[in-house]
Every structure is written in C-alpha cells, then in structure tokens.
Amino acid sequence: MSHKILVTRSSMPDIDEYIEEIKDIWDTHWLTNMGTKHKRLQAELKNYLDVENIDLLTNGHMALELSIQALKLQGEVITTPFTFASTTHAIVRNNLEPVFCDINPIDFTIDVTKIESLITDKTCAIVPVHVYGNVCNVEEIARIAKKYGLKIIYDAAHTFGVRYKKKGIGSYGDVSCFSFHATKVFNTIEGGAVCFKDNDFGLNIYRLKNFGIRDQETVDSIGTNAKMNEFCAAMGLCNLHSINIEIAKRKAVTERYRRQLSGFDGIQLNPAQKDVQQNYAYFPIVINEEVFGSTRNDVFRKLAENGIGARKYFYPLTNSFDCFHGKYTPYLTPIALQISERVLTLPLYADLAFGDVDKICEVILSCKK
Ligand code: T4K
Image (cartoon, rainbow, N blue to C red; front, side, top):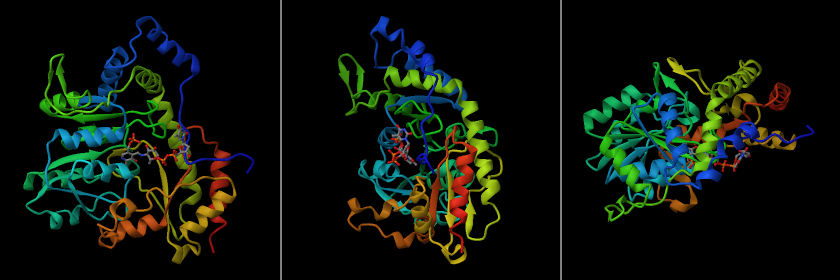
C-alpha cells in the first residue's frame, strides 16, 4: 500500500467555516472561562444528546475524575478492566478501590450476572463502560444499583450520539461521561462532557472545574481547572453541523467491513445491538487463533507490514498495568483477559476509502490458515 492508514483520523470542518466561527474572538478577546461559544455548544449538545443537563470540560478523563469526586464517594467501585487507562485511573486518583468485574464475550461490556457477587459493604458505585459504542445492560445495572444503593457513573467516552430505546444514552445512570477527543466520532480537539440529572451534582461539577470558586470572594471546594476553552468549543460547534454526515459515512465504512469479514470461522465481529441507534465509533474484531490459524499478533504484524495501523484496543487490561505493581489479578476477569489477547481494532473514520477497507480485509483474510 502506498500510503499509511492509521486506526483513525480526526474529522475536521471546512477551514473557512472554522475561521468564520473564531473571527469574533479577535473582537471580544474572550478566550476561555465559560464564554459564549462554550454556552452555545453546551445548549446545542444538550439538545443533540437528548439529555437533561450537561456541562463541558477539558477532556473525557476530567469528566470521569470530577464526576467521581463530585459524588463524594468512598470505598470500592465496581468497574471493568477492558477499557482505556482513563476509567481505572479516574477511580484510583480519587483514592477509591477498583473492584474488577468481568465482561461478557459478545459485546464486551460489564457482565451484569457477575456484579452482585462483587458487592460488599464498602461498595459505593458502579462505573461501567459503553465500550466501542456498545450499550451496557442499563436496565439490569439500574436494578442492582437501586437494590444496593449504589451510584452509577457511565464511561460513555465511545457513545457520542448513541440512543437506546429512543433515549439519548447520556440519560441513563446518575452520570454519563463523554469524550470529545480528536480521535472520537465528535471532537472539540480535546474535550469532554458530563451529563447528569441532579442539579446539586451539576453545581459541584461546575465549581470543581473552576478551582472550587463559588464567587469572587468564596472558594468552597478544592477544585481543579478543567474548563473548555473557546477555540475547542468553536471546533465543536462546527463539527456538530456535520455530525449526521460523519456518522452516516462511518456506517457505510462499517457495512463495507462487515460484508467482507462476516462468515469467516475464527473472526468475531462487534454485534448490532437491539434497540440501539449506533454511532459506528470503532470496528473491533476478535480473532480465535485456534480456528483462524493465525494469532491476533500475527494479523497485527501483517497489517503493519502493509502500512496499516490497527490497534490493540484494549490490551493490556487496566488491571495488569505496570503502575499497579501486581496489585490486581487479571486472571479473575478471564473473559476480559482472553478478549484483550485476541482483539484488534481496525481503522475507521468517515473518509476511509472503500478501496482501503478492501485492502485491509484482504490482508486479514490472507492470514487465515
Ligand atoms: N474512557 C474511555 C473508554 C476512553 O477510550 C477514553 C479515551 C477516555 C475515557 C478518556 O477520554 P479523553 O480524556 O481522551 O477525552 C486515544 C485517545 O487519545 C483517547 O482519547 C481514547 N480514549 C483512546 C481509545 O485512544 P491513543 O494513545 O491510542 O492515541 P494516539 O495518539 O495513538 O492516536 C490514535 C490515532 O488517532 C493515531 O494513530 C492517528 C489518530 N489521530 C490522533 C490524534 C492525536 C488523529 O487523527 N488526530 C489526532 O490529533 O489514545
């Protein structure tokens, strides 16, 4: 292949549209601290995501970390290790103890049949991940949380624009945290958001993202700085104009992959879930080497030799990260462990050429023995 293909490529608006959007910043000199673009984007996203309340932040990680802080949690938090570093780090950085639950092997979200056996008198919350844009079993998670009095904070970093049973995904649980990173379906360069129901929680988040400042003479919590600036908000306003086209193009790429990779023994595809309006965020495949004849790592290498940068999202599991010095036991989440050793996330972005998809599939299938 003459050109390199990476796992994703940021979608960007037309440059003239962006310049037009940021022009008035040169008149106002208002660059950050909840300016007019921040306010406009917040209102437009509340509408698009179909949520009761939303606040914007510098990134998806701060959305998670500050949400956990704002809920003033203590003790143990049930979560999964099959995720990006951010999910587990947000828990540990709040001095909470992550308790790792396994995932289900079909859509890779938390295995709801295993949550209750992990609950102790120290459990305070569940942090499930809508991984790859797949929706967790929100009904069962809500039932368990209600029964044991637990908070639910969804890591919704991958689910921008996803709807479940016709409702915005951000309206499930107590809180949902979105990422608007450059690599996401919708980006504000860097950015994130917290969607929530409780107004007091919203007030806490607003203060925490701005140093805990209540007014010019009162600082009532030890907050940090996690405010989205006006240039990022402007990027979001422009990208939001074309979000439906973005998702439609991703859908077309996804369908092209599915047509070519379906029906091969040893390749498991991401499911289309019932009652879910998808966003086509990622295209993971799971390779069972015993049937396929080559391992995930063989396929990864072969793709790399052909200039194709697939990624091992999510390997290694967060419960085996070096920074935790062997504190957790990946063998206690065996399905997550097995999937992390078999999964490969293929390139996916709106303008990925069909010819490139065909080439990627050809290289993968050439590894079948
Ligand atoms: N929870 C979950 C489940 C998440 O997946 C994430 C983030 C978070 C929480 C936290 O949200 P943020 O705080 O990030 O908003 C990338 C992203 O940096 C990260 O946002 C994302 N998850 C994760 C799954 O992927 P890396 O280390 O793989 O990124 P990197 O730099 O290798 O980029 C991947 C590819 O994207 C590149 O090969 C090319 C393309 N790219 C990258 C950048 C930076 C672009 O096209 N443009 C760009 O500006 O983590």
